[in-house]
Image 1 (cartoon, helix red, strand yellow):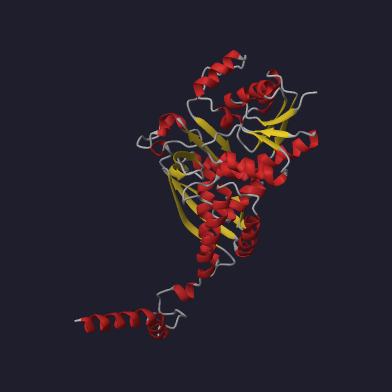
Image 2: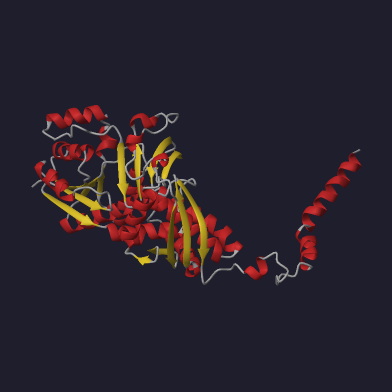
Length: 402
């Protein structure tokens, strides 16, 4: 009786080739799994294609709501931007997909799982560590990493094995989910060249965006976005709605020189309309309701949380430890943020919260202010005392040398 391998299947050229490769290389039956995290693919067509390639069984799992609730919302709370630019969209989805692989493998009694990650990227780390953490006895097969086929060689293999190839096969490697869309390869590998317009799907060119700005009000409760322009939306609907609104104004395009975990510099193109807006709005609301000490300290925690997620350590206990702190700070992160979208630009133009630390009576320069300015002289004296004394000593030592 043949062994069976579970393959994370996207329906594209790479993973379609892997079905035949696993069948031939390992003399193994193949079960395929597609996890829907908002990639906007035709799941029925993917299943049909998998079965046409002789798979034993195919699974489709709708995980969009779980993805937003358990992965995207924590990222918003953590203001997650890797190297200050990338909203870790692909990185957030990988551990969820890997966990579904483990679940199906256990249900089917399968001893081996496979993914289509290369040996150069970050995804191999995210899949492997998550799988090993959840099911250390599972064998992990990474055919692309092991086989090392070029794109042209893949196409030849596909033709030789009766795998249907789209006549419009894209020169780009694209991954997308509700939180963002990443585009690599082709002409993008020359970082000196502007990305051609053909690589973008979710955002219009800023110069072709509407000539009038659009204002969007986002409501947060416990650090989580819950309503747009006064309309309560479910988690998935909220992200989808904001992707469309921001995308039509050209907001969310990211051209990023990125440091991959394996040490390679990589030019990355992303489209993240909703993520760009929500992260900026959330960060602004935090500054309104948290103390200066909380804001400054949380920036360090956020950066560490983001680094763990990007580098494939979603399962590390430290992530949950950090989230305990992050979640505590979010108790007061409630209120509304008004955002202006115009020609690719994003600007927070208003915010309000019942937990706001802003007191107009303290902040105003009018005569009725409640702030006692006479206190400032003594405060300045004490605040600057170490700096003043160190400079006095410095000048004294310089004088002694002369």
